Image 1: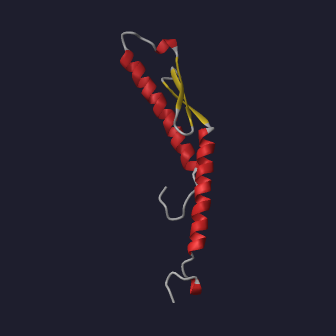
Image 2: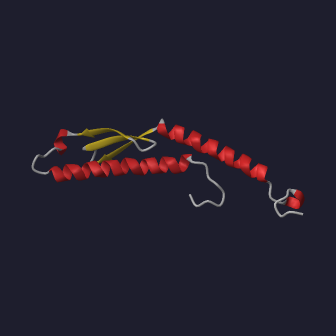
Image 3: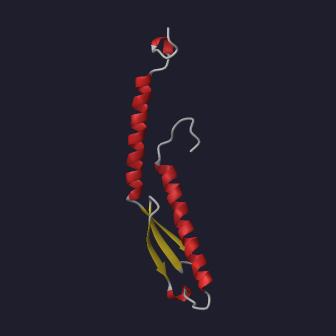
Length: 107
């Protein structure tokens, strides 16, 4: 009797392959769903706002004219980075919620 046979509660390769195929389909569906979602990030009390797709593509940056100081472009850069980081954190949360969970896998 083989330890990989199906007799006596052994390992069933067909069932494992079917589960892997189903998981792959769920992941593809989740990725498609994420690509169609958008999130908004902001910084500086909405002085800088960004829009990002659920798949992480930056699609829009809106800058309030009050945030533009020609003598302090460094702060504007920091606000843009913070707004993108905010949107990216939301994308990460969406991805975590949308992806199928695999028992025994730490994600």
